[in-house]
Image 1 (tube, rainbow, N blue to C red):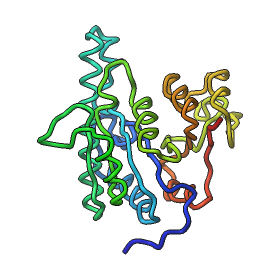
Image 2 (cartoon, rainbow, N blue to C red; image 1 turned 180 degrees about the vertical axis):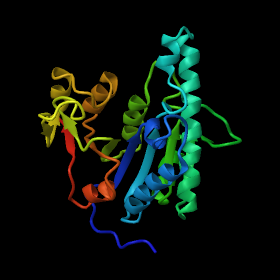
Image 3 (cartoon, rainbow, N blue to C red; image 1 turned 90 degrees about the vertical axis):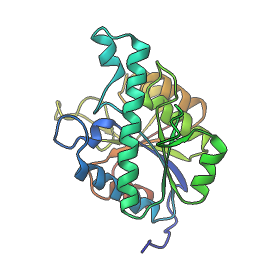
Image 4 (spheres, helix red, strand yellow; image 1 turned 30 degrees about the horizontal axis):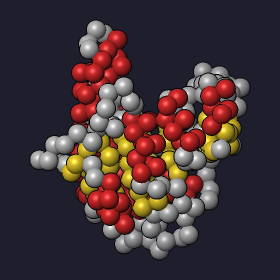
Amino acid sequence: MADTPQNPTYKRVLLKISGEALMGNTGFGLHPPTVERIAREVKSVHDMGVEVCMVIGGGNIFRGLQGSAQGMERTTADYMGMLATVMNALAMQSALEGLGIFTRVISAIPMDQVCEPYIRRRAVRHLEKKRVVIFAAGTGNPYFTTDTAATLRASEMACEAIFMGKQVDGVYDKDPKKHDDAVRYDSITYDDVFSKNLKVMDASAIALARDNDMPIVVFSLDEPGGFRGILAGQGTYTRVHS
């Protein structure tokens, strides 16, 4: 049974996770128990009455930049990366629907047999009907990352924030896994991200978020209940804003 909505901080959000987040400890591909765990996190937020859309990377299957670095033509490599995101989106859709959440995968590259093409008004309507929407295939263009796709779709869907699910609980001044004295920021501006060269999103995604005044909430996806906790006004995270 769905929980009673608890006046969450945001009413409509976009969750961005990397493809690597779906690997678990396998080192490559999909780890179904990990996919299901993340799906339960999404369900817990959906049960609060929050409208949720998602963008998932494809780095667990194929990363365009790495293919390009190994001699593959960049445009071809990027399209292969986009197809990898569709596979991840379908896996997440299957996990969410297994939990009773109506879900739609919407691809920037038309492939009608497996998912819907991207039509903004239709996607908004799905959200209004309380379906989880997963945007796949990036922006449909090479040379743009899924970070940029997430910022673009969040702006088009009129989301109130982008939630970046990471392996750390916020933005630090240096890598907390390598430096014990790393300091976490509670909040930071877009310009600080640029000036301090902090690894939140790629530069074009941060610039797009800044231009559209789209807050970015960086939190740990490995913390059980963390996604829901932040929307309930609790938890540890970093907020990137203007």
